[in-house]
Each structure stands twice: as structure tokens, then as C-alpha cells.
Image (tube, rainbow, N blue to C red; front, side, top):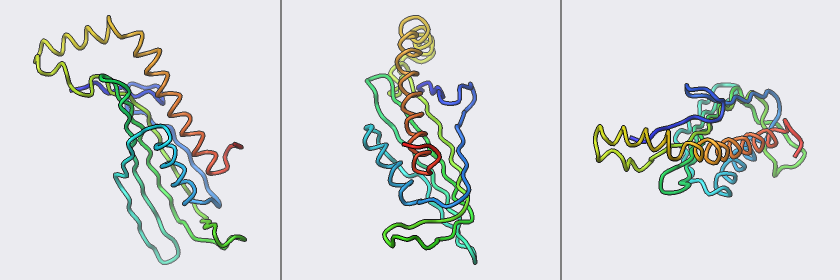
Length: 172
């Protein structure tokens, strides 16, 4: 099986970057911007979860997105985005075409790479595991940590900045 390496957050355990916001925001714009970012950067986009919970005075939403891009024959990148929109209420906007909500939103973003995503070493059994380890440690180690890790780190941070911009947390 391929080797997954989390890059964003810099921990050997699954690591996530967290963004929290409370106030007025345009959820539809945020949603469209995330999908647009994945498409623009050639990621296959998949919405794994979409749960809506309607309460008497508000709504809660949970979304779970995954974007995957095959970089070459050996490496693929994946970026996961989890969204919890809590206690959201629609509010009147000056422009009827804009749909604003007031509430809390929490996002978690994780960028990772998968080495040997096609499991090309698996057909050799235990020897394949040794060969894969040797290949990663001695042959492509520099490329893994300078090219691939740098690329997924930069792409994940670009998506994070796009999300922050959608929430007006940074100026574009």
C-alpha cells in the first residue's frame, strides 16, 4: 500500500490547519470558491459528506471535501477540507442576489501526498516493502522533500488563503 505523508501542520500524526470565524459571511461564495480552487488547480473534487440539521431558529451544516491530483506516475496529492457551519441564520442583504448568513463556521484543512499511490511495489510482497523503503530513502528522498512536499505545502496554503479571503479574514 502507498505511503501517505501529511505535510500541512508538520506533524507525523494527521495534522490539520484550523480556521474559525463568527459573524456574517457568504456561505455560497465560500463553497463556490473552494470548488473553483480545486478545479483551477487540476484536482479531482469529491464532496464526501453533506449534512444539514434544521433547528427551530437556525441550521447546522457539515461538509467534507476531498481533492486529489495525480502529480506523476508515483505521487499524488490530496487536500481535505471539513466545514462545520453552526447556528446559521439567513440575514437580509442590501443586494437580493447575495445570500448572507450569520453564525459560526469552523474549517479544517489538511494537505498530504501519497507515494506509490499505484502500489507498484506491493506485487513483490515483503521484498517490495524493503525496495520501496530503499527507493524513498536513497533514490528519491531529495525530490520528496524539496519538490513534492514543497508543492503540496504551497498548494494547501494557497487554498487556505483563498478560504480566508472568502471569509474576509484577509484582504485579497
